[in-house]
Length: 285
Image (cartoon, rainbow, N blue to C red; front, side):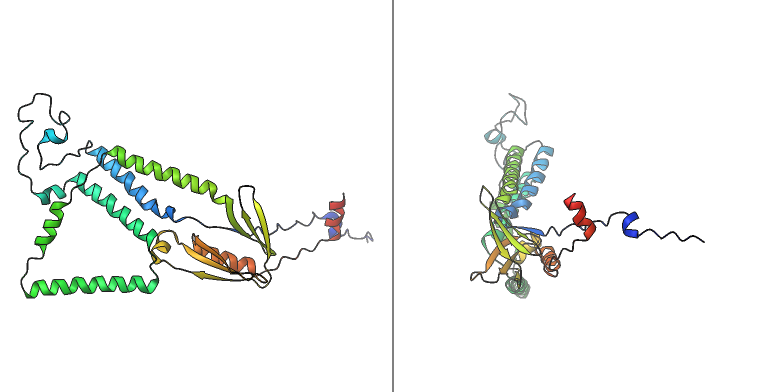
């Protein structure tokens, strides 16, 4: 019967792994220019569309030579100065170059509206309901009095005509792309880092640092604009730091719901590190 003592697990087993410290989360505040990304996407689509139709930008209701001279007809061709076949203004509105331009301008206007105004949840609901009610009321009046409501719409469409070549749309796309790249690179000049034990505010070109405690930290999540939330999940975080009179307001935080969940996980634990004798000996060695 063997009487050899059993080796201690601590002496023969592998060293106890050291748990990585919590990295925390970084919170960036983005400018509202980033909400122009749908315009950049539509500009690229319009550039491809104009390339497909060979940059045909002339007004079909005017003589061909007044818009483009020798691109669509060879030099000296008969009838180059003659008017084109009769095309109504509504048909002109339906041309591919005009529809692409209207699509681009409509998206650009929508993005500017998102950037310029805040639409809270109840406000956007009231606006949608008001538009639906107005549309129903106009259709009811037109049906009751047998009015031709399409005539003013056709007249409006007949006035609208815009066209741009593929180069214009590509320049818009690449300009916005460069702006987005600059914004992404400079976001590190001002951001917040929330750790289990402290809050770090990095700001300035030389990375100036301010530290705040996380003990008894409270924060609020706000959605001031439903449209911005629909585009990039944008929202506002308000940090109430103990012993700091002014609340820290972080506007235009992207994917605010995910940031809120990450903050809850970080703030639900207070980091405590327990060092074993073996780890202390390894650190001294």
